[in-house]
Image (cartoon, rainbow, N blue to C red; front, side, top):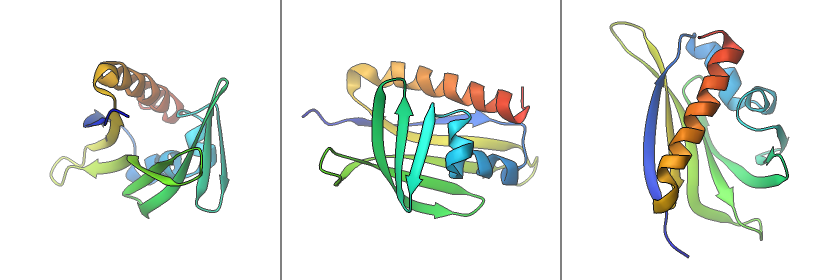
Length: 130
């Protein structure tokens, strides 16, 4: 299996950090912009897009700041890959950004970035940050 490449994206978002955190940290919030359906059982999350289903474990979170999910394999074991959503607030301007950390195979990095851009665009519409 080919190893994946880590990448980061930053998106300015016109929102309070508290509101943004609700959309990145709850199944109902994630369902509004990230996946078609999000189910959680404790720390285990299932993300559903069309006919595709991915499982992840809530790996860490810091209330109001960030959340990190580790992808799981078919045997429900953690993989080395994760995605993290981190809220950044500029100390001087108080501008809010969403930092996305994710992994993709070398051939898919650009496509993955575009997918995140589309999903974050949906997020901005949902929270009225357009």
